[in-house]
Image 1: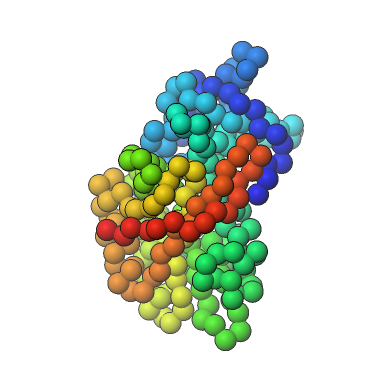
Image 2: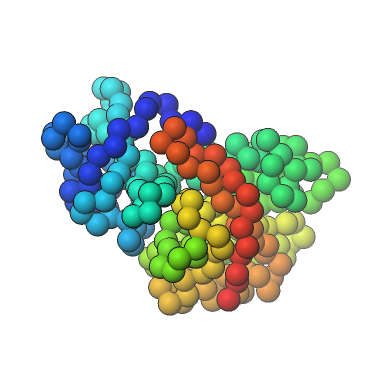
Length: 235
């Protein structure tokens, strides 16, 4: 998935009110960017962090900048905009490049299921059980090479796991796909110390037959692209 407009490197001044970030452009101007990330963004929102912003000239948008990437101290990239995860996964699904899911020819996004929820993707193919696929963007890393989910308490995430459990028990396939939205991770796990309830919901879902898959990303200021599978170390 390529960015629609070339990104501009800037410096983070502060992130506040969850969805706003003040940044300093190379010419010294200070601008406010939309931060499409409801999580804590632990380790990614320190003042002085190098960030990459996407400009827009859409008169319908109040903010003319959107925060897309953050740079790590080692020069790697982390995707800040969580909305990009589904677009990257959809690209991989439609290309048939997700291990084990290539036989599914129909990729249907945002389908209603459960109790008032929408599944990120419903995969279908004649002769195969329907597959309900939920996507989570993983950005937290507290140890070198290890990415963890979640970075804050997520009751919504636990609800999704419970609904996937019902799907699996009904005879369809259900899967959590953890898209690792940073390029310095080599394995993935769950941050049970941050959200014990999510970990418990995951364990219950796994016992019900819900599958888990971790997929990496290739990230540049030009775009974010599906990468190779990563080991998922379930607790």
